[in-house]
Length: 230
Image 1 (cartoon, helix red, strand yellow):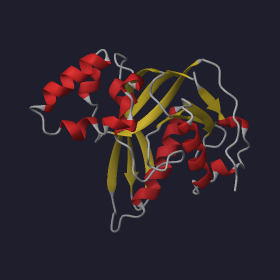
Image 2: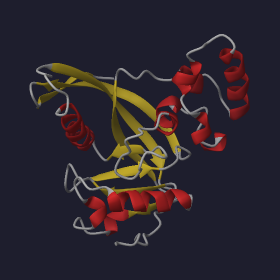
Image 3: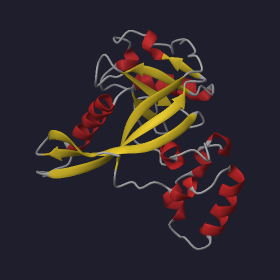
Image 4: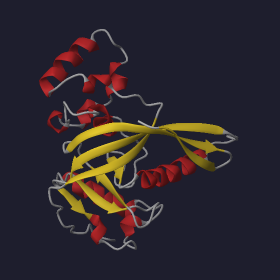
């Protein structure tokens, strides 16, 4: 068994990173329409009386403390959504019990990461001969305050295993349990580049849409194309 490594704490420095999200998931207006937690609670209670779809839209609010939601920033809904709409299948640093905001150091790195997971998912769908998937690209500004640096670990470390998430799940659970804000790590799908796994959106200062991309499926993902600018 590999024990969770002790990782150095990163300095409180501003970073800019990138993310791709499927365009079928729209921004959640409720998070963007308020400036603080008190306004959110008031508006949520009012809308809950008349909007039966509200619970599905905002997700599982019990999974994120209100003080972690960065109300008032551009793109608050994009920052919050991964923590209230958690993928039950999990991800590299989560077994599905909590959400993670994944970011990449460049759009090329973000595309490589998403392309791999889309390829893996759609390969399991029988008789899917052709499809077109459209994604929003997001530009995110955040602080590394409270995060740790996993790029100090060699790329051969078990947390970077391409398809076995056993050890990365252990690390993510340990960091979440000790209230670490996130970690910087090597991109597995774009070696030589970096990603971040934020375990809270608290230190995000803005997320803005920058372009649209499409992925074309012909038995596999055969092309990725940028469709438009900001």
